[in-house]
Amino acid sequence: MQRRDFIKIMTAGGTTLLVPSALTGCDTKQLEALEGWNGPSSDQQDIRILVLSYAVLAANPHNKQPWLIRMKSNLAFDLYVDRERLLPETDPPARQIHIGQGTFLENLAIAATHYGYRAHITYFPQGMYSNTTVEVKPVASIELQADTQVSQDPLFDYLLQRQSNKRAYTDRPISASSLQQMGQSVDLQGYTYQFTQEAALREPMAEQLGKAMEIETAGVARHVESMWMFRFNDEEVERYRDGFSVANSGVTGFKKFMAETFFLGTREESFKVDSSMARAGIDLTYEQARSAAAFGWLISKTNTRLDQVKIGRVYERLNLEATRLGLAMHPMSQILEEYEDMALLQRDHLKLLNVPPGHTVQMLFRLGYAEPVIHSPRRLPQDFILG
Ligand SMILES: Cc1cc2nc3c(=O)[nH]c(=O)nc-3n(C[C@H](O)[C@H](O)[C@H](O)COP(=O)(O)O)c2cc1C
Image (cartoon, rainbow, N blue to C red; front, top):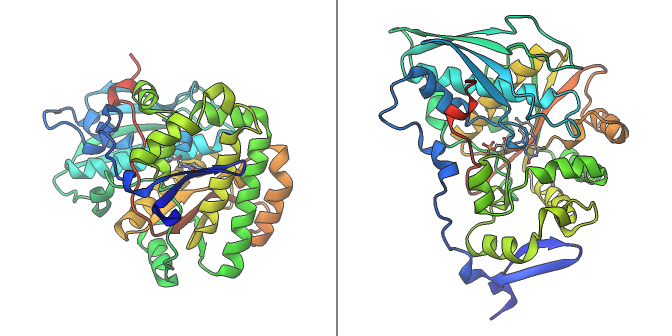
């Protein structure tokens, strides 16, 4: 067999595992943890569960799914942050966690229109708290109101397709007009969306994003926090129904089997910052960033909890709009994270992007073209409801 007939599984610590490309097309079985992506079951009548079934499919940091619901009536409920699902090491102010509340609310509001309802959302009904705490107060109260005038949100059709595509992207360029159209199709709620497809900016950005992953990984506690969310095999995906795995980076079939059996090792081994897993994560980040056809980012002038939630809604709409346009999209957040080791590189990065002093880049993502990946798992809507 020729060398080109082999496919690289992963490169780490200078070791490349090669497997015959003819064996990489094996199907991955449909996991129960992925069933949410088929939409709610047809016998589900409760409008609250119907909209929650779509809400839990939203983008969220590390696929923590940090949401809790307290039902109030047949048509009303409150959304809380699940304080047992924070990321204190990589997201110390829980900024990303609150962006993940907004993505949830956006999916929910879109789904409501499909069923002929309007979702009235009141943010922080018991008051907003600061960026140094996550109080036991609802992020939002939601009231569903049947309305014959409501028309289905055009992005509803993309809720079951949307994903964070973590593959390396193809070298097909994206036109500036597609990138512009993406921003124009979405109500930015007063926030700023910027993008670049210019190599002169894209290339240094990619190097900074790779470097940011090196910095994140060099902190043991940060690396371990991420490794706890990594699912080493299908059995773990089924058991936890959260987190991420090699499948979300496009490694499937026999390649996935080989990676999980021979390469990944155990969680305990992966905890070391010089483990092959740690190196593979860094290498993958460089590869992802360098393959981006474009980068986009969302900026806010202020950085309150409300800004974070609202930015989450805008981000989710952009991700859905990208799906509609056939674009792959993937957040890369390390460089935006708020711990001391990142401060210097973050300062250089904000300078490179020309971000006005005091403004916050809330989301940074790459865009390009790629085959879809296998969806990430989700818990059941019922799992989020407080007893
Ligand atoms: C605030 C936020 C930050 C994120 N940051 C990253 C990131 O740095 N790297 C990454 O691979 N994915 C990131 N993601 C994507 C999540 O990993 C992804 O949404 C989650 O695993 C669920 O997968 P899905 O979006 O494909 O449904 C982020 C998502 C959100 C909402």
